Image (tube, rainbow, N blue to C red; front, side, top):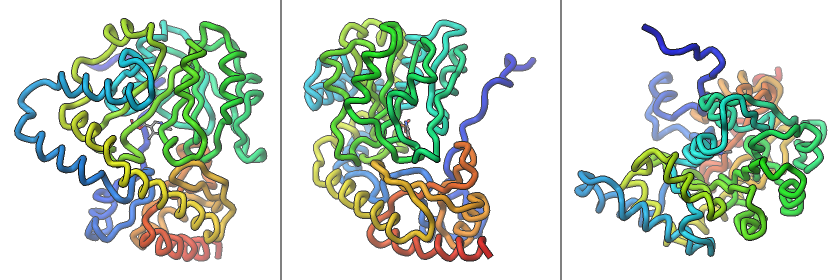
Length: 360
Ligand SMILES: *Cc1c(COP(=O)(O)O)cnc(C)c1O
């Protein structure tokens, strides 16, 4: 027998992993600089690592208290009700839970192009359809209400990514307010703030006091350095608590993940260092890459390099992994994640050498 017809679904294309590349090149993964998945180059907070170690002997039980504790701590952090926090396996999990809760078969979502592919994948898994709004390079990928509203046709869910992956562009708070007011009251506006720690702009979470067609996504994968543990959350209107109870996969955020996230939330120093380094690195990348780049509110910079696949292959041979943006529909661009103060300048040298080599 066979699975159902999956030809409408496309596999997720992740940035290449250090171990995978190291095996291919016969190198030690520790000698590689991985700047392809927007991970935290400092890794997790030491407090999170300690929490993981302390939790190890206790993973024989289902995560119940830790999940509740994390929801409450986050509610406290954002000054909202615990019922508003949907703890999920990564922000990707939050996207799935929203798809489950909002999409009837055939309902359509509106997602940015270029953009994060999982919005579309999740909609299709849930038998939904996908329309896109175009972010134009000629316009520096500007994120304005008109860009979304020109394409908007009553979709059930509209995704906004701010800062945007892979462009780094942001929606202003006024733009989000304008969109919340312009779309139908049956349209859910999903504001994906996976990279919000890196920008100066305020979160849209407090807009939930005024709008009930809004959900805000956050994750522990990026600034908190816990990508391997898969913990994220959505902040939503309080009245949806019943929907969460009905759609969530039981115990989908793990005991280890919840304990690590709880510890990470208490380590402001680690977060501050992370954000400070990323802001330094993105300025360094923009100042020193021999290629046009775009302003970024995230922990990465998009650069126009001509043949992205050739450039990414050339840097990889020298041990620097960057993201070829072909799968985002930008075959002429690479996305370079912010490294540390040590790795970033060396990576820039390698990328510039590759640019010179490929351009000849
Ligand atoms: C990384 C990322 C996410 C989610 O990552 P998780 O690891 O599932 O939390 C969501 N949205 C965007 C735009 C991202 O880049």
